[in-house]
Image (cartoon, helix red, strand yellow):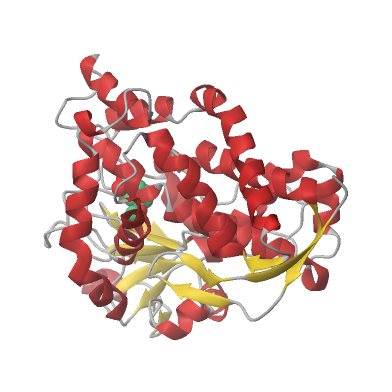
Length: 409
Ligand code: OVM
């Protein structure tokens, strides 16, 4: 390794803590510094490599042979360290083992399967919006909408019982913290991990799930032999881990974007009101702009050449999805939330074989909520100071106080 490094130019280094409170509060300065430093940077604090430019993040995401997931997509290297829970069959697996669970879940969550849910979710969103607006023209967009809507539709769609649903957000929050170092955020979650994990695992059993939800369809796939009966509960677990917090923060992001549009993104809400079919573009643009999932790691499976540098075999690489999604080398005016741009190609859902399998679910939730809101509200703006929620992986809001003005019916 020394010989390799000596024969190549010095790797740019950065000693910032990407999981420290200061960066989590505002990651944009670090992102800019890492992109500027070069195509690959050494993060000295954790002795890992970093990609922050779109080109390298995209290339690593699509090269699953060179950049594996089975050693874990967090800082912890499963080659040497025991994972905090049995690894995900999807997220923390490589082909060929990854492929059967992925095929099953892709079908369960695919556009065809979601058609069955569409009418009901559109009606649920209208009902929720009606109820929230009935409570007054000022409310917290995070709790009242971004959390309330996914919690209203998603657990029912999976088919879990009512009891204990308040565990979903804390469990997901911990799971996403666990991809980072074992810092204060992980320590704060630690006392409840056993209890939350036991509850989540219990919801994955066949006899606990309704007979018509995503969970039942995963179990039915094991009856057909598409996956094994041992795999079925772990695939259900992926839904309960990755399916709630992510959509909550994605919805928060798009609501924040519109609420701040008066200052930074003029006329975006008016455009959505005139053309509700923009709801899906708006959501994808918000996922690009905010990147609710900020980072994932990969592990090099061989010495990988990056420009004039080499990432040695077995080493972890931190991919900054959020930085790639605002790389000026790829995006014009990257910091603006702009409904007239084409956000496709963003890496907020990842890219390649691991690209978010739930993205159609997320888009349907966003479409339902945004169209319901746009039908009733003709102006949305901040009504007070916002507060971030810190998580080692997620870019999140704790609170977005908004004021709305009701429009014509
Ligand atoms: C999983 C999973 C997938 C994506 C993200 C994630 C906690 C988990 O399969 O459990 O974050």
